Image (tube, rainbow, N blue to C red):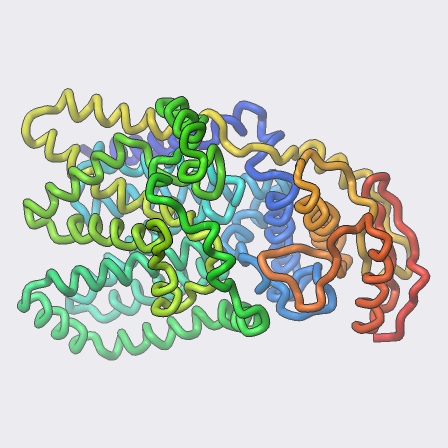
Amino acid sequence: MGRGREVALVVGGLALALALFFHVQIGNGFTVLFGDRFDGVIEVALQQHWWNVFTGRAAWNRTGWFYPWPDTLGYNDGYFLYGIAFSLARALGADPFLATAFSHLLAKAVGFVAFYALLRRAFARGPWPSLLGALLFTIADNSLVQAEHGQLLMVGFAPVAALMLWELRRALAGARGWRVLGWGAALDLFCGAWLLSGYYMAWFFGYFMIALGLLLALLAPRGAWRALFADLRRHAGALGLVLVLAGLSIAPFLMVYLPTARQTGMHPLIDVVPYIADPLAILDIGTGNLLWGRLDAALALRLPAQFPAYSEWTSGFPPLLLACFLAGGLIAWRRRATLPGAMALAAILTWLATLRFGNFVVWPMVMALVPGARGLHTISRYPIFLAGPVVIVAGCALEHLHRRGRRALALALALALVAEEINLSPPVALDRVAELRFLAAIPPPPAGCRVFFTADPRPSRIANAAIRALYSHNVDAMLIASLDHLPTLNGYSTFNPPDWNFGSPTRADYPARVEAYARVHHLRGLCRLDLAHPRWRRHPFAGSAR
């Protein structure tokens, strides 16, 4: 296939992948987006923070909420890479919600192109098999079902890092040190930016690569070890610079998140336990799945404890893809295809470590041995990352059919694999039009207002009263603070400051809690914003000068 035809093939495949993944948002004209009024708005506020940074209105590591605490970016994912895409869209005139949708589109587009390139270069797949793999990876059902958490779409960055790592290994086998330095520097900078953007997928990548590296080390013949050590000695100088740059690249992440880790202790095991899934959850793909939705609903009805109708456990794989993965793994081992065989085993072993077997769980061992594991809360999201390795290994089964002359069967199976990834009920609930209307109704703050808090929360469709009491007014405060460049003491995040006490704003003691916080932090110019019927009020407590 000529280069021009291959480029056209990739562009057409990318358009199809984006159309399938974003079909509901495209259909509604991007008026209702991934997420909801709570987590979705938090993401918009965080991405707006980077627009404020790039336009010189904010410090990079300090958001407009949780005032006056420092390093407040470290209480949640940083969204740095998303913030670059968001800022580009904002510079072109997009509103904050539309700019957030653009960052999601770009993450998926990057993932598609990088996955295609990874299959072509690292696995020597042909254009059509690579196109199928990139399509399956990009439209993965588990990625769509959990897309209300926008940071999880950063799984699209995994093939970028994998491709850089592959190119670095190839460079080590060559004689040109500048190629080692170039690919090593690119990998360092990208992984540092990825960590500052979304912790889950970046950590999952490292977790999987550790397992894969150990397996490859065990399987490698003695001659391969000698060749590797010779390559390392030959490029020792370039690798030394790569290691130095790695430390510099990760420094911003550590500067922001290490203080938070020390302050909060990160996530104890008791918080993680509800997210350690039952093995049956590997088939939980959501009741909206095009081919398997009815089966999913039936299992949820009969086995609600092991197979809830929808939860954080809903991140499994469709049956045909799982079958192809298992078959592909066996074929790879039989043919001594070391890399895909090791990937299959690494995927299985690392996934098993995230599960419960009765009262037995392996995850405490992972928490003790793997650095950064305590920063994870919802480990049931790991299969979203595994979509890449699973699709790569499953491709071995299709290649086997094709080589044996069963092309019609391979084509039919490929079409079925695409169909079973389509989900008709994605988590699209963030009403962009309603949110913009709400923001437009807020009058300018009064003169002398230097910091604000929110009260009188606006109505919400969320049935859980405890969730509403924590999120509604705090999340609105975050968005308003980021848009109006006016700090707020409210906010809600994965972690909160140690003296945060701003839940339940309708309780009679809420003003007293606000005043106590303002007194401790010596806040001045405090004002109140009522949200249900937007209006500002100067708070009678003045505080002392800060």
